[in-house]
Length: 126
Image 1: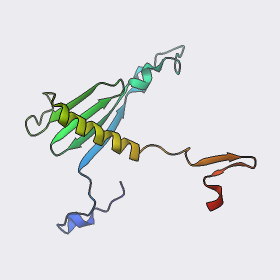
Image 2: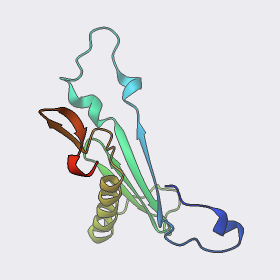
Image 3: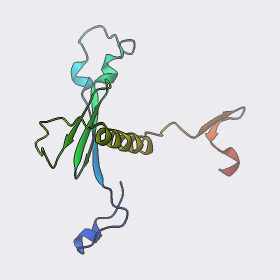
Image 4: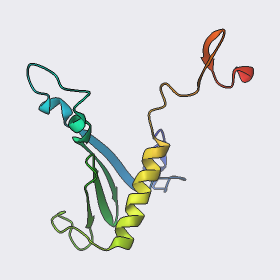
């Protein structure tokens, strides 16, 4: 996320360092049928992805179809036994949702369409 790694080289803990790693995987491309395309009317392709939040103590995996898995990494570092403690799962699900909201693709946001055309919002400050 654009933070320098040089404090690690000096044996220091960097300020504002993240507490978890995040990654996403999208496998839609491997499932697009040959021939006639049903997408975008067939929304199942939109469900073929996942996002992961991995902290020191747990890993939370959210799938595009709404399913999820959570693992207690201290008790199960091999990610084989799903965790069912709703309090722990909820905390990690909320952390994932917060991270995704803060890192959303904003390519087409902040645009204002007026009589004169398209510009950045607020137009008075540009």
